[in-house]
Image (tube, rainbow, N blue to C red; front, side, top):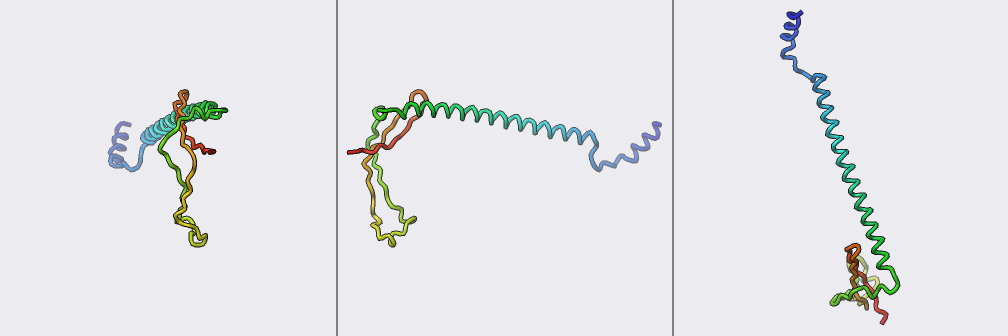
Length: 132
C-alpha cells in the first residue's frame, strides 16, 4: 500500500492546479472574520452617532426652552458695527424687463444680537428688527 501511495505522489507531484479543500476553507474563514470585524465596527460607529444625536436633541430642547421665553430679548447682547443690506443679483433677474435700478439696495433697520447658553455651551445669533 505504501508503494501505491508513493506512486500516486510521484504522478501528482507537479499537479498543482486549483486549490485544496483546506485552502478554500481557510480562505473562507479569513473572509468571514474580516466581514464580521467590519460589521462590528459599523455597529459601533452607528451607536456612537445615535448617542451624539440624542445629546444634540437634548441640547436643542434646553436651548429652545431658554431662548423662546417672554422678555428673553434682554438676555441677548448687541453686536455693534454690523450692517445688513439686501441687493439685487443681476445675474438671476432680468433687470431690463423690470426697468429697475440695478444699484438698488435696501437697508434694514435691524440689530444683530448674540445669546450664549451656559447649559449647552451654544452661541445663537439673532437678527432683531427695530420698530423705531
